[in-house]
Length: 83
Ligand SMILES: Cc1cc2nc3c(=O)[nH]c(=O)nc-3n(C[C@H](O)[C@H](O)[C@H](O)COP(=O)(O)OP(=O)(O)OC[C@H]3O[C@@H](n4cnc5c(N)ncnc54)[C@H](O)[C@@H]3O)c2cc1C
Image 1 (tube, rainbow, N blue to C red):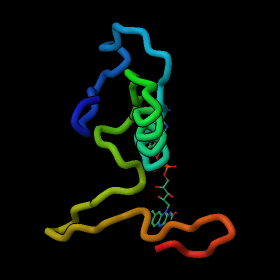
Image 2: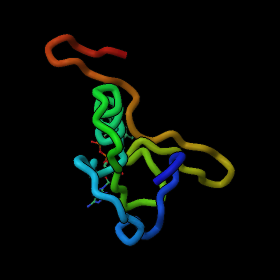
Image 3: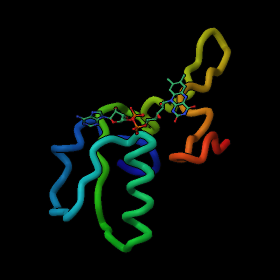
């Protein structure tokens, strides 16, 4: 997976050995990837079964209109709505 696009047959293209694999390129997987990169734990790879990143946070195009799906607010544990 490069530049937000996924190889259609990612398992066939893996020729290197990685210490870390992130399963799923949704918000959780991408957030985990940021933390891995910040901690210097790379290279790692993200396995995503769809042909785009974002998981349930996606933009769907219907009849010329763009609908933003997914997260609209984040909630911090015990601190209420964060935005
Ligand atoms: C309309 C709508 C509004 C929402 N509003 C909010 C909100 O306000 N606040 C909030 O916190 N949340 C909201 N959510 C929920 C929000 O979608 C999730 O909080 C967030 O997107 C979950 O991210 P995730 O990465 O955990 O899971 P997902 O987004 O589901 O990502 C999981 C990823 O893993 C991939 N995957 C699954 N199985 C495999 C596999 N075996 N191999 C490879 N890849 C795999 C999937 O294709 C997907 O890309 C909303 C959801 C919807 C639909």
